[in-house]
Image 1: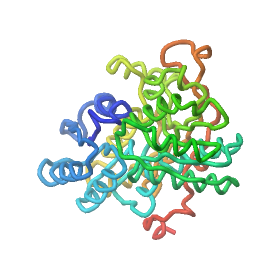
Image 2 (image 1 turned 180 degrees about the vertical axis):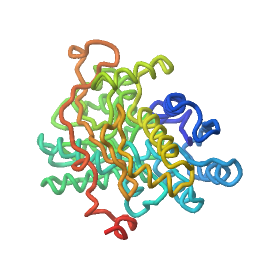
Image 3 (image 1 turned 30 degrees about the vertical axis):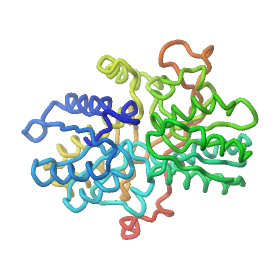
Image 4 (image 1 turned 90 degrees about the horizontal axis):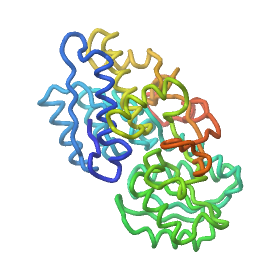
Length: 372
């Protein structure tokens, strides 16, 4: 696992994703086809070159059969190429760039939890329907931010809205005053944050200082997860619309697993951490069913087998590498609506997987073109 254990995304994945994958290994029984399962994890510090170097080392020297996570879309794109060349499996929960299953798709990789297209189709469409016709984006300046801004911009324009402008920022920025003032002066109905983790938290906190979100302009966090809401507090985050693939308090199955996770982490899981469990378990089940860890056989088995667990009942992996499953539109509760710690969301809509994710008819993945 190539994780962010100390940077801006560490709350969203980090040690929690390592714990999620460890729980999957334990629940599977600790061994597969005889040998014990060993889980390795490093902090790649959100550096694509460091992630690439470690992936090469693991595949060429250390006998690693599969990488279960690569945090960050830029690092994921680089590692995906390395895994393709080495004919090794790579599972991705934290990256969201739709390019991973479009132009850069690979026969040995799976994008498991979400992507920028699905985010745009859920929260983007919902905000436009509510009257948010003109948009200004504040985006992280790398593949994830660019993809999220592009996919959401297309949805806005197709719905009859307009994009008035954008401002990009480096990863892990502390002062958002300049892009926020630029967005505020644009007069856009919606100021959309196309970033994540600590960047989203800092931007939302500073936006409140400028009065953004309390007047006609609406602040939208395109990617915000439960740990972000926990850090912000309901007083600051109430009313936010957001897209998730998972929420701990949806049903008995999600609650049961999440309470086990909470015992170890002392916080509820994000969708990325729950996805780390589900994707690791699905991979191990495929190895067991295929009777081999050989990549081609395992990938074929993972595509044949539906995902049947608390995370994505009825999920399926397509030929472009996208795991298709339902997505959810949530609104953050007010302090008065919350019944206790971590009771943060109310469900607004469930978006079926075939509506949330890009249809194969629109795919730019060469693997899909060959399959047609």
